[in-house]
Length: 153
Image 1 (tube, rainbow, N blue to C red):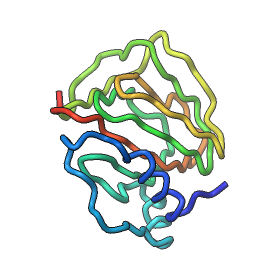
Image 2 (image 1 turned 90 degrees about the vertical axis):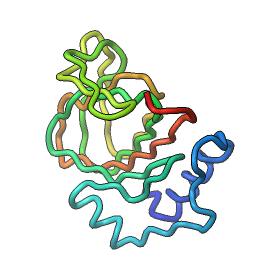
Image 3 (image 1 turned 90 degrees about the horizontal axis):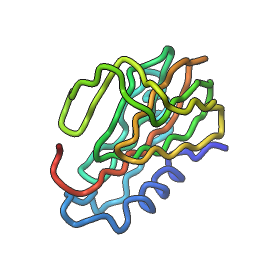
């Protein structure tokens, strides 16, 4: 299944609907991300859209990453290709705040490991540690980040 730019935009509109007026709303105009821009995004791994209410990333991983905790962003991950062991929950080892509301660490202790594969959708609520522990890639995945209202922590 391939959402494509139009399906992804519709999913974003659905997810962003009803969020607090405290966050700056997305643009009133429809956002279209042409296929070539999406392909270029996956070639490098890069954000496609970012505002105060949500973000859409064309993500690419070749190796494991740092453990992460987003205090305000809920991640919805749609895997297009590749696979990975994905750990959620538990405790972040050696946590460091790297930006407002963003924590990174070396790994996770005590979490639950799951296998990500093409077609899978994972939703990681804000505040839940998560970690791409092992990657068989390249791993290409959309991430839609819906930001909870409030001030960065």
